[in-house]
Amino acid sequence: MTTINYKFSLKLHVYIVMFFVSLLNIIPIKGLGQISGKVLNIENNKPIEGVNIIEKKLNIGNITDKNGHFKIDINNANNDIALYFSHISFQTDSFLLFKNNKNNNLTIYLKPNIFNLKETVISSSLKSKHIDNHSSTIDYIFIHDNILILNYDMYEKKYKILLLKNFKDTIIKENLPKSFRPKNLYIDCLENSHLICNDTAYQIKIDSLKISFPFKVDIEHFNKTILDCICEIDDYLIFKKNNNEYLHEYYSISKTNGEYKNLITLDERYKEREFKKYISWLIKNRLLNGNISARIRFEKTIMYNPSYFFISKIGNKIFLFNHESGFIEIYSEKLILIKKIPIEYYKNKNWKEEIIFDKETNKVYTTLSNDGKINLSEINLLNGKLCHNIIIPIMFPYNIKINNGYLYFIHHDFNDENTKNKLYRMNLN
Image (cartoon, rainbow, N blue to C red; front, side):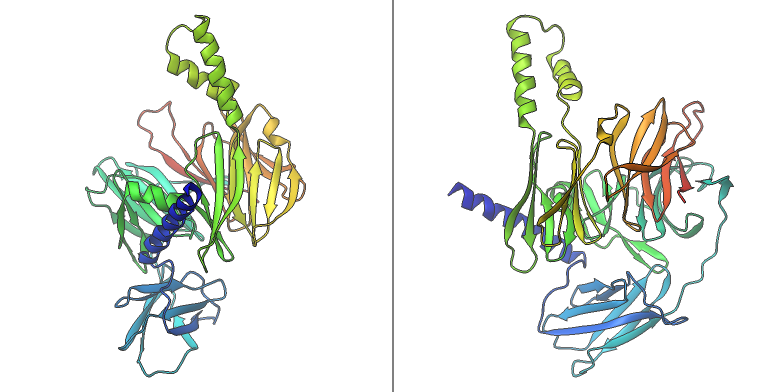
């Protein structure tokens, strides 16, 4: 009885996620009719990936794939419908589809936007982005080759969100409402962008020359649903259970029939038992002086440190970087373990317990620290060895990310109290 109720609660949890993301125009609502087609650049007839297609009355939508193709299920539409096509680099267009229209293979052409460009400051292969002299970078995420940046203007005392193209061209700049209280930016497992605030999460919609926040949910609900979703592959959504730091469990849910399947269990609870046993022995023998909580934190951090795990979709496979067993485990799109690759880098005392994934190039990197300098190395996914070592030329970089062969990080000069957080970019090629 307990097992049945537990699995039911997991499925209910997934259905909540599916319902929530459907409100965000992530998953189209299934209906009787279907519209399909492709979106092309009117100037060169090349397909456009990432175009948002929305039918506002029915509150349904989808996005184009890398070939510009799209499909939208119409949920018993009894009237004419209007499809809106939008992309950050193209002018928004609409298409009116009459209810008796039999055309099911549309071709839509979008015109490129023309933006006013601003220059960036360049120093050798390292570039720093100065939004202005009194703004500080809080966080940033990537939308293909574009960068969405969360900034705080110390002079105006306002949070701002900016969209940059190729790191140097400001496309959109918006002031955030004072009620937002933003903390960071987040991309969910279905590649949708969110602004995370103290008590609310807002979905970010970028439409031509405007950034809007069409949907919101309280942060507790967001944390219990969207944050648990790791990635999407083939017919499955991969989720992480809400375990403790010594137990990591992953499971999959079929998008077709809702079938639940245990995928991976990483159990290090023996470490937890050992340090608790050791703490009890210290107390029993009156050898523990001072704060017990501080000693527990020390044991968990130094003596019984939980292993660092990283799981992600790379190409059409799931990669688990298992630093407890010393292997990269590779799972097929059907979630079958097909290969293990041994790794050694995690044994290096300078390893920072960090994996950085470049979604555009499908390359994976890790970092080693040496007196404040960070050594970035690519992980060869064929043999697990490190290669292409690069030293980041600035001390104490943080929030390190890689996109399309470029390294990004934020830096704060602690020697200058007037220095703001700056975003830097470095070409890894």
